[in-house]
Image (tube, rainbow, N blue to C red; front, side):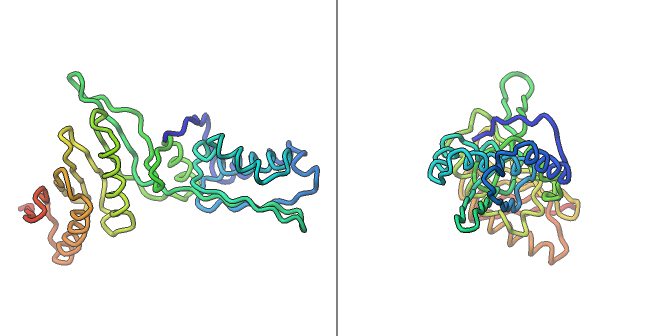
Length: 257
């Protein structure tokens, strides 16, 4: 689900922490009952995570109930607004301490939907496909990049708007899971769903482009085969220019002259 939050400014990591400190100072009610707070943001972008943690703290101060807090967060879709995939809030009554732990998904692709109506394709604003299977505003990746938590350029996943549906999306999620963490992931620059439903991958191996044609099915199995093929050709110090895997039983590899 696409986050509806539109960020109007960008902050680096230190600016985010200054903002967090400022908000705490300007919110004395947070400390009216002498509660202490510990927060763990993990891989989350600092600014939205800080705002989410403050939201949790203020709600708990008002209602003093973890049960109420859980319902409030579930009903408000706050996790989508702040790029949080999981959160845990604990209260230690002995020390009057509230511990907030946040987890965020990892960005996998920068997604573009395009329309082929008219004489020229129209590209829509980029979205981010994350490891939890949800779409997020592209500012999610921008925050992580500015804070040094995302150091690589995300590959592009392009698909026609007309073909978007549950079945296609399910297949793309499975193939994304299959490739995530593999050595092949480092070589992937673009994944394209064509108008006819076939899949094309563009790799960059030692700065050489490689076009890979997957056809319409068996994408998960083909990813594994492609990973082994790329490793083998690199060991042989030969880089293919085209790999045709439309027929999974007959892989055709072409090398540049």
